[in-house]
Length: 293
Image 1: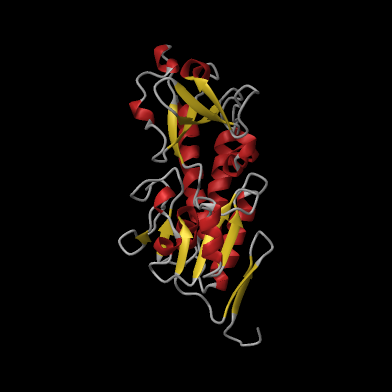
Image 2: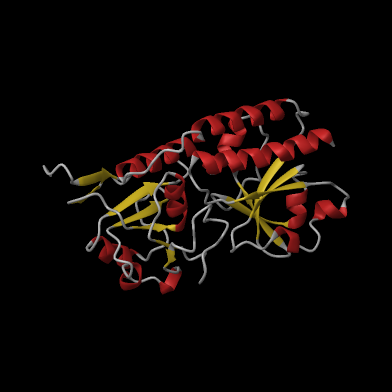
């Protein structure tokens, strides 16, 4: 396009989304919408995945102003007309490495792309968290977003603090990331498969992997097996599809009298410097707590 007001953006599928003017009414997958908000763009609407329900999952929405952002629903409730009810002029979706729009039925996604430009950001395990955050920042800038002036320096400070506190604790400190399944089982994360967990490892935090076996991203184990990993800190999934950690009757490490600190963890993180700095601060607080006894 030659018009100076025209807009375009090459997404992570290698596809070019284009419009005659810069989009101003963005519909986004919930994770993308919360991330864009931190980058200065307020979506007009958000939608969830099959893991979500009739209300937006507060673990995923970050600081989104939910009183002004329309939640379209999730799963089987999503069809093209529902998605387009707010007249969006751009859809921002995420994928996990295969280009498919996460949370949408393939036929729904196909018909959606026939009616409105779609940008897909790859948040899969092949990407680093910095790479994902940069792509969202680039998209937000193309949409007129304003960068938070202190975000980058705050993130640098949070990284430096975690590196320092992780380096000051005994080498035996152990961190396990998991999602409570029910009273009998937990899904224990394989840390190398999660970009935000790889950042913790790079900063000196010792993340413990579950035994090899079934499950690419998670190993589903009995709570006794999770306790056998001997965590000092548990990063626990706080999404609405996970059982709240506090409702688990008695994780085995409690039966053994082991004191375990917990940190709330969203496996679908808001991919902004602000959100990541907050997460690193929580982990650093927990590490310092272990060090202080």
